[in-house]
Structures are given as C-alpha cells and as structure tokens.
Image (cartoon, rainbow, N blue to C red; front, top):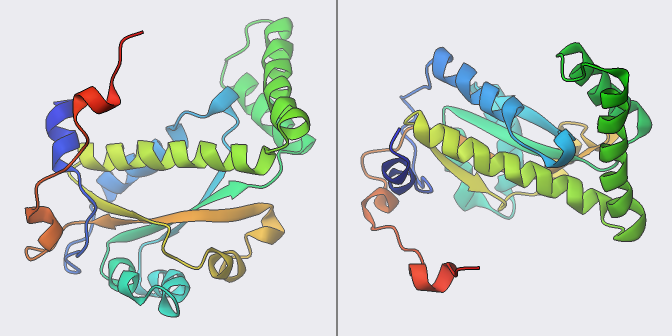
Length: 217
C-alpha cells in the first residue's frame, strides 16, 4: 500500500451511490479494523451499532431528521453506517473482562505479567478518574482514535466514507438504548462508494503547509 496515495484519495464523501454495496469480505476486514484499533492501555471502551440495510439506516437517520437534514442522504444512500459509542465509566467488571481476554489470548506468560498489565491500566484510568477528572472524555478520545483508524482502513480497501458529528447524539442514545448499556454515542460514519456526481470528489485536497505543522525536536 502506498500511504501517500491512499491518504490523498481519501476524502469526506458528500454523496454516495445507493446502488453500490460493500462486499461482505471487505466489510469483514472493516470490522477487524474496528476491533483491532489501538487504545490507551488497551482499554477498548467502544461499542459499534452497524446498519447495513434500509431498516437499520432509517433508525440512524432519525438522528438527522430534525436538525441535520443535509446529512440524511449520507445515511440513507451509504452501504453501511456505524454509530461509534464510548463507555462513560470503566468499572471493575469491564476491566476484569479485558484482563481475562488478554490472558486467554496469551499476552501473559507469567502471573506477575498479568498483574502488571492490570495495574498499569488501573493506574492510567485512575489518573483520569481521580486526578484530571475527565474519565468519560478520556474514554471518548479512545473512540476517536478508533474512528481515525477506521477511516484509514476504509481508504486502504478503496471504500469511501464520511464521519459525521452533525447528528442528534441524544437521539441515537435513546434509539439504541446506549445509556442503559453504559455508553454514549460520539459520532457516526457512513461507508460506501462515491456517486459519480459527488462534487467533493472533484475538489483538490487542501491542508496546511508542512512548515505550519512540522517542527524538529
């Protein structure tokens, strides 16, 4: 993969071709990317609601209808739409679940290594919970890392995408019962293939100059 070419091909799709669906094999790779994203101390505080049919997309589109109708077609015409949700609190049961899964997957050759991994995760979580007091926001930031990872994975697969915060997040939480599950939605991303007449596909990419964004330590 040529990273520069992939990055420059990727853009925020404004109009999807509703006739084009993402092949199952490619979508399976996208789900691998969602699960395999990095997160601080491997805390993985995410949940994804995936819509791949008209009924599912209609449920997500409810969050655009009142205040963000310009985003409704980006939901309706996409192949797949994903609600990215973040945990609001990482309780002991959740931390234990991560630790036991890591152990099952062979990450700890010795009991002391397992304890060290658990201690490290709880230490960093404690910093954000008790010192900085931004636990929910910190967990949400991990989900935004995942979102960026997913956009790059999609671009590598030749899948177009658009991330959207222009949705009624409270409406999504209600529609999918996220609060009751200990989550809150942070964004949605539509995936599919660009329409031939998507104006944004024809515009040059614009980014700040290298001198503005890089400096040497």
